[in-house]
Image (cartoon, rainbow, N blue to C red; front, top):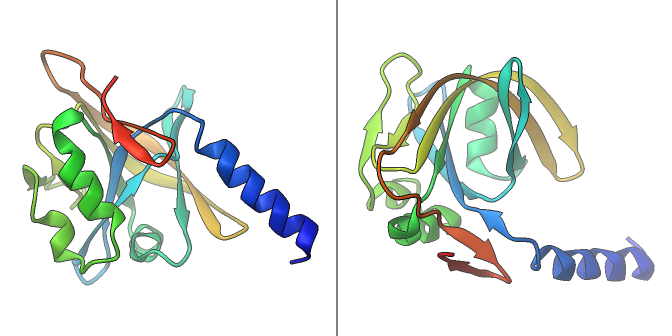
Length: 165
């Protein structure tokens, strides 16, 4: 990478810190049954027909290999009370450390782990994988959605920190 590309990347990262993002935890299990979780702000809807979500995952992340091996992945939209879960799943600690906090359950049909008290839970069947740069772009058809009752209190990410609007 030359200096102009390096400067462009740094400027881009600085600009991205100013983009408000909802915080989610993406989960999947590999063929051996090991569970993986990663904090993500790069989740977005793709289409209403079929209902689908897009998730971007760094190719070096353990979750990337798990989604690659699996038919399913799960997106857990976090609430304000899930900040510690987000911190754990964003760290490079061991896999099981990521599951020490939170109301984790396993969905029997997909094998995906989910937070029972998340703002919303999307169980997805992987449909498309596209490599781009350092990441894989995964598109999954939403096969089930669960939405929490009560107050909407999402966990957000802005300027390198978690917050609640």
